[in-house]
Image (cartoon, rainbow, N blue to C red; front, side):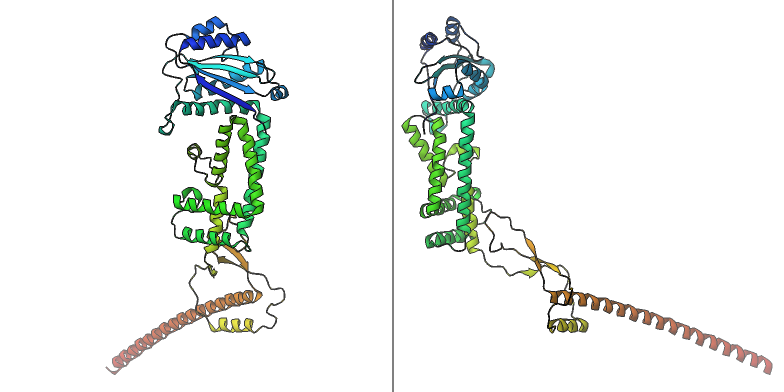
Length: 437
C-alpha cells in the first residue's frame, strides 16, 4: 500500500509574503486562476495585496509520478479540476463563490508532481475557519478544512481506483456481518463465554424499556454490546481473520487521504475503535454515518436467548358455542375413527396466534405476528359435522317457531267460533220469546 496524495496547507502572515510566493511559483510554471484562465504574475500580485482582502491560504497538493502517468494528470487536467472544484473550495473556507480568488501553478517534477494554489476572498469577513471549543487551536480547524479539500480532489482524480476499494471494503464488511449473524444465531455455540455474555446482555435488555436498537440504547447498555462484540471477534478465529481483512481495506482507503506516519497511526486507531464503538467520533455521530449493523445483530441474538416460550393458542374472536349432543357424537365418532383420515378429506388451515419467533429464525429475519399451521384431517371432519349440526339445530328452532305461531292462529279461530255460537244462541232466545208473546 502506498500513499496516493499529500496536501500541505497553511496561511500567510501578511500580503507581502503572498506576493513573493506568487513570484516563486510562477518561475516554476505559469500561473492560472480559479477558472483555469492564464494569469499575469503582476496582476495576481496586485489582487492579493488589495485592501479589504481576507486571510490568504496556501496549499501544495502532491501526487505520485506513476499515478499521474497512468491517469493522464497534467497541467490541463489540473486546470479543469480547479475550475470544477472551485465552489467546494469556497465552501470549505466559508467564501462566497463570487468573492473567491485563486492563484495556481502546476509543477511537473519527475519524482513528485504537485500543484500550488492560493485561496482568499475579496471580503475580509470571509475565508475564516470556524472551530468548536474542542478545537480551540486554529491549526486543528485548518486540518479539518484541509481534509475536505484533499478529499474533494482525490475523489475526482482517483475515481476509478476508489470505487474498487470502496466496493471491496463493502464486500468484506458484508461477509463479516453474515458470518457474525450465523455464529450468534446457531443453537450449538461451543464457546461458553460467548453464550454467557449473550444471556447476561439479554437479561439486561429485557429489563430495559423502549426500542431495543443500538441507536436508542442508554450508554451503559451500548458499552455492554460493544464488549460482547469485541469478545466474540477475539475468540472466534474465522471472524478474527475476516476482521483483519476488513481493516486492511479500510487502511488502504485511509492512505488515499493521509500521508504523515503520525496521522496514519491516528487514523488507523480511529478505524479500529469505531469498529467496536461506532459513536466515538463526533463528526460521524452528527452525520449519522455510524455503522451499527454488527451491534444490532448482537442485540437480536441476546434477546433470543432470554425470550420466554409462548404457547400457541387458536386466534378466535367469536364467542364459544355450547356443545350439543350432535357435536358430542360427532367428536366421539371422529376420535374413535381408526384411520383418522377419511378418503379425499380436504385439508383445513387455521390461523394461529404466535408472538414468538420460530426457533430457526435468524435475528434479522422479519417474523410476522401470526402464521398458518396445517390441521389434521380429524379436525376437518369435526369442523364439517359441527357446521351441519349447527344448521340442523337452526332449522329445528325455526320449525318450533312456526308451530307456535300456527297454534296461536288456531286458538284465535276457536275463540271466534265460540263467539259466533253465543251470538246465534242469543238470537234464538229472542225469537222464542217473541213467539211466546
